[in-house]
Amino acid sequence: MKEIEIRGKLNKRGFNKLKFFLGKQAKLLDNYKRLSVDLSPGFDLKTRGWKKLKNSTFDLRLKKSGDSEKISLKFGKFHLKEREEIEVKLKEGQFLDTLKLLETLRFNKGMIYIWESWEYEYDGFEIKISKYTDDYYTWEIESENLKKDPCKLADILSLKPYTKAEYRKTIDWENHNIHKLYSFKLVKELLRQ
Image (cartoon, rainbow, N blue to C red; front, side, top):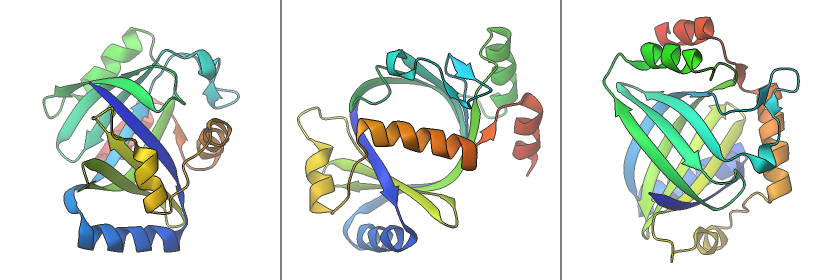
């Protein structure tokens, strides 16, 4: 499935304001805590980033939200608004076995992301707001209808999407300050919490 997606950062006040607005004006689709393991090719342990990110052709992630587990593969350059995504749902309890499989296939370096999200449907768009820490929040607007531009909705909601350079800088900052380096042992510990 192809999708158009934009994203940006919120401060705590902006997050609370947007959450209040969406709570009144939009349909809540889901609220979940997610553990996501990003094992996309080309990860550099020293820089905590992806080599040749601008030339990257796909992102590979294993995601767990409550009892829901899935593999997600996104095609296309990371900074583009329009990318194709394939998701394969796993049976509950297959998360660690799938990680072992991916490690065997040499997808064994990357990052671990943990956050809480609220997903809403508003005017034909999916809006996701996420809390990573008590002072770090983000938003995403996504459309599966390629004729509906999420930038127009962002303007209406007074949200500023990242530029390509800002997004690259944000990923680097998050990888050094919020996210954790991947290890199978750490994922097992996080799943027990």
